[in-house]
Length: 303
Image (cartoon, rainbow, N blue to C red; front, side, top):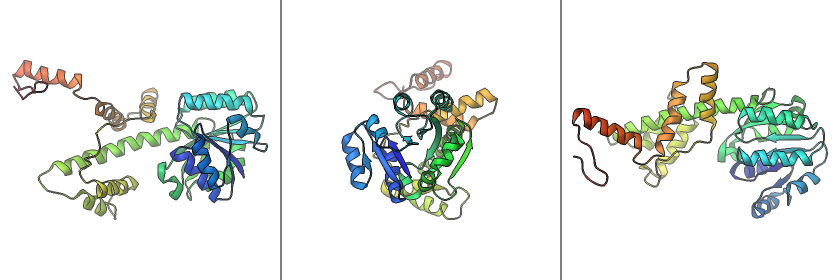
């Protein structure tokens, strides 16, 4: 089938390649013309603008938006809404808030444009392994683009979950769980690295990845990391978040569902970004005040 991809970053570019490999016709656009040229060499049809992209598609048009969540997605979908026609399809494959997806489906629907929210997981490995797809929105649109979705996803890594927002809701919780899993691995490996035994963490992960209860793709990635840089000396312990963990915790509060592990993993990410955090300085000062415990002066020794 014919489908357009808007946004040719690490995931979008690989999606183009996977679709082309599956025999689909892909029209592609990105703000960076050099990136467009690269996928043209792979066999895609390049576009110079969103308007140009739409003009190169046969009705009903299907446009997959793979740009960062927030303003970039909002602006892209708004512009597409002025260019597309009734019965055309917009697919948001980014990490959008499910509430935004519900709103966008309503706004596009008022113009007769069908909308799908496609939670997409797979990262830079999606080209080889496939992209896990959690899709919500217009069922007829899902059925129309199913050939492309089937090419993008690994076997059994695709399904339709319900009306607009359902796909991004499932992806949101997926990422919340991911936060907690990564935090558990991080804490366990820190203990292994700190203890009195001189443990080879690559060996640990290799053993764990063969038959242990904690084997997983994340553990496989950890083995890969430790094989390249056992001490992680080239990294700084600064961990960003793209929003899904926060939204998952917000939903737990809204629905009264306890999510202590996920919530704590989100807060640890916040803590990772602070150097000489004020709250920790308060903690040290209070210990010194009530118990006379030693404190370490900035730039100096403990006193």
